[in-house]
Each structure stands twice: as structure tokens, then as C-alpha cells.
Image 1 (tube, each protein chain N blue to C red):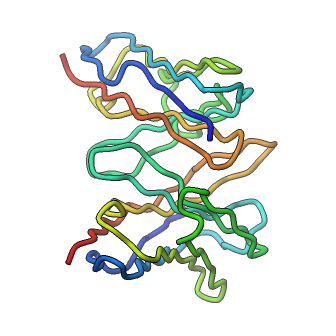
Image 2 (image 1 turned 120 degrees about the vertical axis):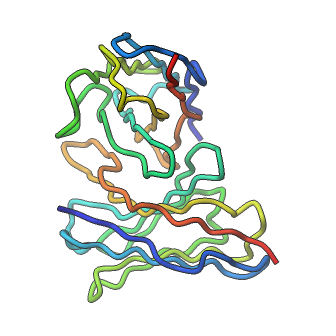
Length: 122
Length: 107
């Protein structure tokens, strides 16, 4: 059974960098069948895709966040990470990591972490 | 970005009812449409992918249809555990975008 688990500080000061890690079990992030992604959900709102990393190390980010986002992977630990710089209160959200299954040309988020609330406040 | 618009934003229904939720894309996305269910405090759960393919383990009372710009999620015979929010998501082109959600409440 594939499991994803987010970890990181729940409180970040304005202008600082938000850092989260997703630990994957039951699957290898080095598998070429998947992308590994971050998604966030503002309180009481909809979902916003942040970006993904592929096993090759290639990344793609939502243009709305691209200038502030870094996604990296540590295959030895089977983890991938998110860094979001220069945060403001607008970045307060529940952050999810998720696996993107790409098969037969179809892509979908098939496994999700439980989510972690990150609050930006002084 | 492709805009995804769901309707209604919320609905009230009773156990046993047939429920239909629609999702409209701002441009054609072929069949690149996924549906998710989210319960309070939980992560979204994949229900339908490629517009009409049922994810493994999802009850058959859930079905999806549509192509191009207009899509539908149908729940036949609503069950108590189906009261939740539902989101559509396009996977046609990055940045992948989601609908704003439809909350299904108990009447």
C-alpha cells in the first residue's frame, strides 16, 4: 500500500521560506511511472496545484508560484520536498503531497498524503 | 490556465437520491478530467479518471461522463458516506486546475 506523509513546521514567519518534506512508503520515487506533486488548499477553499518532480529530476511549477517554488527529491530517503520562499499570509493553507499516476496517456492524483496545515504569521 | 467551473456549489439530498454534479472547462480538454471526493479534514480521494474510468475500489454507484468541455459526475442511490465535497480536475494541460467544489449535504 502506497503511503505519503508530509512533515515540516506548522508556523512560518512572513517573508521566510516554507519547507515541507513528503516521505513515500510502499513505492519508489525513482519509478518512471509517476510524478510526485505538491498541492495546497486554502482554508475553506478549492485546490491549487503547485508543481511536480519526475524521477529524472525534471520539474514543472504552476506559473503563479514559479518564481518562489523549488521541488527537489532525495531518492536515498524516498522523499521529495517543497520550498516556497517569501511567504505571506496568502500562503496559509493545507499542503498535500500526492502521487501522479501517468498511464495510457491519462494523468491523475491517485495517492495523497493526509495534508499539513501551514500558517504564515508573525 | 484552463478554468474549471462546477455546478452547483452545494446541494442537499437524501439517502437513496440520484445526484448529478457538472463540471465545465473553459476550453476543450478532451477526456482529461478527474473527479475527487473530499471529506472534512481529509485528503481528496480519486473517484473517476479519464472522465469515465472508475478508480479501483470505488463503488459502482459513482460514474462519470462527458468529453470536450462538459462533464458529469453521477451518484446513483446516495449513501450516508457520500456526504462530502466533490472536485473536478483537468489533466489536459499544466498548470492542472481544479473546480471550486460541490458540497453534498444531507437534506
